[in-house]
Length: 66
Length: 402
Image (cartoon, rainbow over all chains, first blue to last red; front, side, top):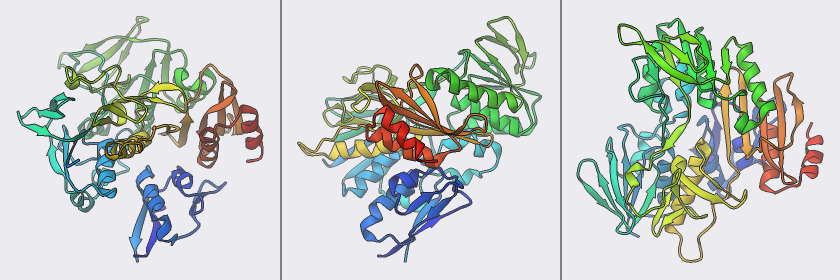
């Protein structure tokens, strides 16, 4: 099933752990804000997206089935 | 393997259970935890939950739905009191015994206390109940809060108490807070931040004892230099003790934690994870016991995979540890193992603006990175440690990062 990456920006504190896990999807820029580079990274990236969800200290990332 | 027992119901134990299921284990998983709550996040206990910014219902580590989907045999609110590594039999305080083919020990650590018999108004911070009790104290605006220990927990509580507008004294045995971890230069930066925020910081001094008032509540803290500080509330953050007493006589090696091999195996079919596990991290060539959040996750995952590994599939656990601490509006992040004695160089930003990243050197390599409000740089520089980059090359890389 296709899925979408969702970031709750009210919770996000730009810890940049997700960027460590998947830099091609999550990018914390110089302004210290997180930018989602790809909302639908595809099935081959699901494992790492789940890791990003689990590793986020603020539980700000979720995956939603489309 | 048909039955796994996970002893310890917090972050490491939860990630162990999730990983077992994710990797296809469909046998029985006993999940034993001494707290009655399903796994919750301890991080906000010194910060957002204590301050009231985060509601209590938001600290769960897993949704009810996802927790139920793990199909665990739950033993919550039940303490494990004994274990035999050879038979892999876990004894519970109820008299019940849990038999398993594989066991993950993740019983964590508990805060070190000041004394055995403390007056009322003296707190440590580890559990949800600890936090709620302290929050209730802060809410009625006590006149004076004394924080014992300027480590990360103490410093976070001091910052949160200042957020309540409370008068805070922080007492630290070291001359420079955190200097054993960060070195003196960086420890002083942290000390200065608390001083600027109006914390009365007393360094190089210990606590002699606590004095009670007539009503049985704490009245003052007596320091080893003879000074007596009035106190309505005392918060003690002087480190933790790994919970291994229940494993005495189990056949496992206990020495400042459960001693594991480099793959987290403590005995055949027995692994350990989280604050309680001590293992040789090959990447740094030293025995480690890591008390941080991210380690509990990574180690829980690795421990689950170690349990399930067939011959030849065992992998060493060799992470670059990482953690952070939020104090006031500053986010401190530390990756790797800073060598307090080694060279430390600010490579991004500056100490003056309180927004920087600094690299630590050990044996000609970059061994640690410390950041303050520089998450992007910390994560980039952490990769240098993962890659084992030499000191000079690391400095050169940093000079290109702005």
